[in-house]
Amino acid sequence: MKQLHNIKTMGGLICFFVIGLKVFAQDEKPELMLNIKHVTENNSLQYVKVQAQLKAKNKLQPLKDLAVQIYLDSVNASNLIGKIKTDEKGSAQTIVPASLKNLWSSSDNHKFIAIAKASSKEEEITTVIEIAKTKIEIDTLNEDGKRSVTAKVFSYNNGDWIPAKDVEVKIGVERLGGSLKIGDDETYTTDSVGLVTGEFKLDSLPATDANRNIVLVARVEDNDQFGNLSVEKVVPWGKYYQHVNVFGKRSLWAARFRAPLWLLFMAYSIVAGVWGVIIYLFFLVFRMKRLGKDKEKSDEAILLDKDIAVQNW
Image (cartoon, rainbow, N blue to C red; front, side):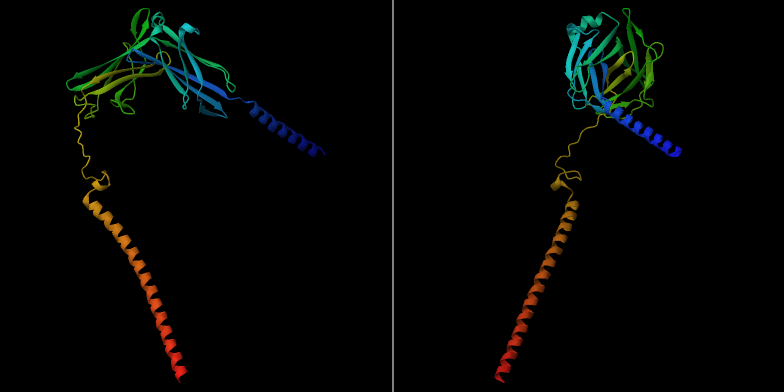
């Protein structure tokens, strides 16, 4: 009896544990996650990017059509940067308007406040980031045929631009779909004077125009203090390749009737051979049927002659 009592007690505990897990799973609500980034391009254009995601069942999914309001420093109508809605990827962005220039110039550090309004499914959420006013400069060096790219990062403090130390900087060449690093290192760290230097090792890089121009870019990405910075510089360090128009000439990648003659001959020979075999098979089938009919007629004629001979006998 004691053993039976222990089994019943253990079964009751297991049932209680399972029911508790189900109740906990039912009470778990989706969690809205709102990330905000400040981006400065070429020390002039500023914009704010937001990324909205919904965490449900341990999965992150982009949240579409979420209304978000962005403010600078404080939540009031005069400090409104913009009202935006997220796209199908859960992202949206808005430019910092020129009307907030005086407010931006009045302080060394600023707060960006993103507020996602409450809906029937999600509660209101507020995300705040603090950014220090920063700028980044890019330049080039060419000493004894050795080309290098330098970048300097400065932060604004008490009316002066001072070097920013220990900042991770990426230096590369802007290409279609991304940035190509100039040397062996992916990132460089600024020294005590806010400077990084990278050797340019990209020889014979295709240029963007006949002047051999390429676009160098220096970036600071997702820095906790400075946000995201980028600056560009055009230099004649590329190699121009004359574009040759081969449209209309015979080649393997040309249109159907512009393929090489040997390839056309091979393709059409295969097609002709296949159709020739098919036609020959049809001809043989037709001939066999015809021979069968002729044989039936000859057999009928022989039988008829035999019947006539028997009657005459």
